[in-house]
Length: 561
DNA sequence: CTAGGGTTAG
Image (cartoon, rainbow, N blue to C red):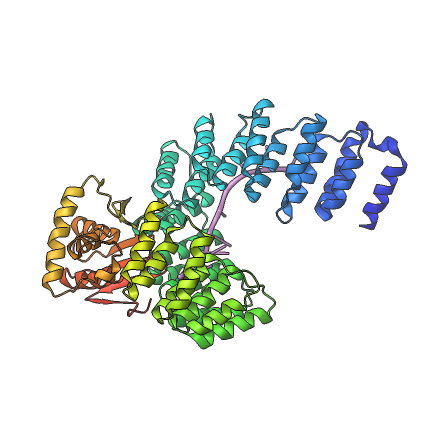
């Protein structure tokens, strides 16, 4: 720094140095400064009489290398205002990257206009960073538009598009682009593969994921840290914990993300002990856990009912100086609530250092309901409705609270309020992968091309399930309708459609794997157990929280969920 | 001096 200061003093005392003939050497100084101390580099930039674009770009890059900062965008604004120097492709690449890191949508859109105006709108780097910016802002369709307008696309552009779809869970689209890429003669590399694999993880598309794993080996694609981590996560999220473990064990180097993905994998399988053992091994391997690792550890404790261990890891986390995030608090509240310690959960929430979010309050209300603490539950649920009047979950929670104490008058009042305000619940949605395509079933939506066959088959299944002595759990249906209709409504639950489709489309030893966006209801849980026995099929359901592996009439969660 | 990647509560 002292050398830099001296150089800076020299520039200040000899104004002629900042003349354009010295632009190159000044750029060198800036470059060095930006690397060491961006704020200093920025000051230096502002003192130049006529800085060139290289100087601007260098400072922007300096800011990008540090923590998220709006500085590159501010610098761009300054560039526009001063009308000189003109931006080049590097400038736009840096600014778009900054916008995508900050998800600064409006700013990015403005920059997009400037890029077009400057005539650089059709440059490969500008377009790729722009495409990435839009998808990072979850505006995938805008990203797609940029992508479609590109007259040349290399592996980076294709990967950016695939990653954009993958991040928002548009799995079929991601895979479609992946196939189009190969058809277009562009070879996927390890970055492409990571995006496609994580799309499979999200969708629970095991067969596709396996195929991608083979593809990597067959085509000699570099199996680096990121690829392996994505594979571990994919196998774990598809319920194949053995395969996840095999990949993990074979990794030559593992960082915190790699360990975390395996720990989280055990956690969602309900394998609490394995998750905690692995966390200990991570410590022995001297890899510093990050906040995601702790989420995995704490949620493993919650899923395993390990209250004492959860407390232990919580305090060790605080002792290490890790600042707990909302997710960590959420895990702890969940830990207490699952163990039916509603009072403790409540005290814990009261002691939080940050304001609890609605999700945490909802976890509490569910626990109050289970522990018959109706008054408290009602109070919190009503506050939730005030806080988030557009969120259907809150109304459903309050009405189910009333339902559980048979207060039908108040229950229908909440239901009516919900209807009057036109608030729609998030529909249940389940998916199943058949022959490389992910089929989605939304509750009450019969638009699937094979809907007729599925309906007929569902009728047969429901007949057999009832004949076997299953008592439908009508309380799972909150609609204010007769029992017959309630029973029908239960058979419209999306996971049953997906399971039925799986039974129709695959043969006996094949496991049926279904992914659901919500939690499975108690009746579906019971029915799926029965189906696994009646049809002699292993059925694996990944719900919003965790895995359920049904076989021979029992579930791996042992009804603790 | 430029663009694309892995882990994340309920």
